[in-house]
Image (tube, chains in turn red, green):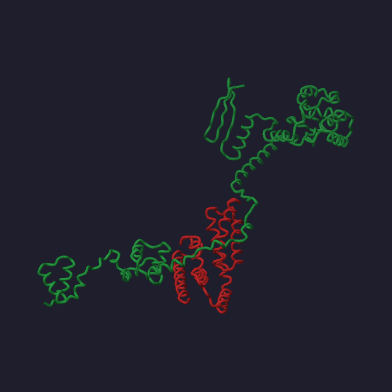
Length: 161
Length: 354
């Protein structure tokens, strides 16, 4: 891959990677770090990475970074999530998009990841399975459960509102 | 006349359909006279349109949906499975038929609407703020050495073999002519500079080599930088040998037209008379010098012919590769026959003599 192709990848995928990472981790600094790490790894292996598959390589890198982070900080994450539930203020959501954002935030890590890969980037079940190292059937199940949860969450919140 | 409800219904329907017989019409008229309130039933009935004939009740295919293929392993309402499968585009043909039958089911439509709301849409306003920092301007050193390893290694081996063969085959004294004070008879460089040296170096009765070294520096300061320095110890050595009989015996073939040399050795005169044409040449460049030296190393002569080059390359190739490679020129009466042989294959070509 040439320098020009690398720069094209930056312009093409940097924003998309950032949105994907931000949606999953919910932290701008962390999402920026993920994007930077992904492109640094790409630059290191720029000679060996095929230009046609660079998109999958970048997203797979960010997915792996998320998984690694989730594994490292599992206990801390659980503690923080419990703490956030305790101090959480009553939410007032007046539109469906906000409800969906809230619902997505309550999905499990893997459900959120496969759903964003599916909806944001339009990856197939097979491609998502390869990126996340899980089976195709498991990908289907995660997406099904995520959608069902979101649907129920939207309906429940609308009733409450 | 009193009619039963069934009889009255029959008469009214027959009236609307136009199949009322004369007796039935008489019965209906008599009944209307007695019961005028039924005349409202004889007014035209509303005509039912096709759209109103569609079934709007609960779906009848619900039992079939229990056997959906999509998300079969997951527990959930069939409508959820069907709606999510439709959104994901993974419904089978049969499931598409089921969904088409449910398109008027408000319950299913509500399911589907809510499921479609779960489709995430990226917010395009969110952009990575440091995109410019990721761009690279430095060129990538993408040169791959792997594919050049074997050719370069083979070339290096051939070159080394050539050097070794030449060193073994040639006279050791010719390898270091300057040190020994003996000029190689193949060096055009030394010949071309002979005149320069002869005109620059004044014949003087030098006694030792130390003085000759001093003289070299004088010569160096006088010649251009890009010229090949002459071998100053050549006439000096000749003089020393002629006068004192010390030092190495100079090469007689390359003796210069130095008058002092002519006085002491009669055997140098014929060669000295042949050399002025070579000495008349201008000093050659570094490039030409290197070319001549390389030719001497590779082919044994400073100006090899094409045939000699080809024969030498073929011989080296044969020794290095292990495949018989041969190039030879067979002289014939009116032409030369050039034979090139590579393994079992050989190519012959006639070349007219010049």
